[in-house]
Length: 352
Image (cartoon, rainbow, N blue to C red):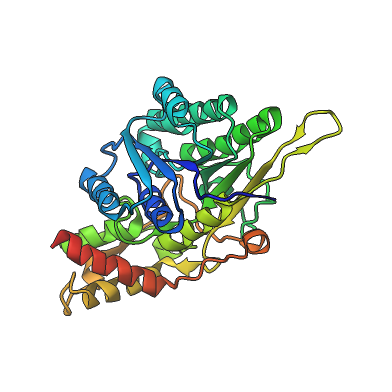
């Protein structure tokens, strides 16, 4: 593994107004010295833009002395924008988090996934090819495991049967990165994230969507009759994993064919502790009452409905994180209650 010192570097974070991206930039502000951090995001309206604005304003307030921070409102699917960004800033470490997320949305709006997840990622790879970088880290997803029966999911498992277009684009990212690593010796690491949650997260995720509906007195639908298992991973644990991996790139080595052995790796980042969806919803309810988002006498049973599985969903996500522990000495550990408590307290403050 090639060690990378992030101090005095130029670091590009795509999707920097997003949930994980903004938290990563905030963490880099604390950890890295004398760096230039460039963020890019198209700030689209896939969900409430106020959340993205809130995150960007938080970053403006959090920027410390000694860090140069630049935010560009732009789309990674625009090749000219990416080429000029790389030409101007010459980033040495690139973290590609910009993507069209969501399994269900990919059924009704497939074009968005092709543009951002395929064309956008291709533009990033091409820019890394022509402006050599020390490490490209990019977001994949636990969705690539599809409906694999073997658990926990290992990065050694075969993942050739996606059950949504979103999953197919994320698996495609891994294949594209492998090809560019092989052909152009670009050190790249893909990260399969497992159900990320926390304060100022994405409203299309279950915990946030459930909360919005419960506050309005609407009924929430719990899919697969509550029998889904999810490896919920708190956002701070995700960011800790990303920062560690940024600092350890796969080694560049020569193969017998005279071409590089691809300096390529993929890791799971998950809590390695799947929770039943009904248990998750019960803890969420308790924490929303504790934070005074919901009244103490809230009739929860009257506002929940158990329904069948939705197309594109999978019954279980469960991360094997042994490789992450082995190579980077890290395993996510935030409990679901602690994470949902932080979310509930943030929700109360933000929406009040």
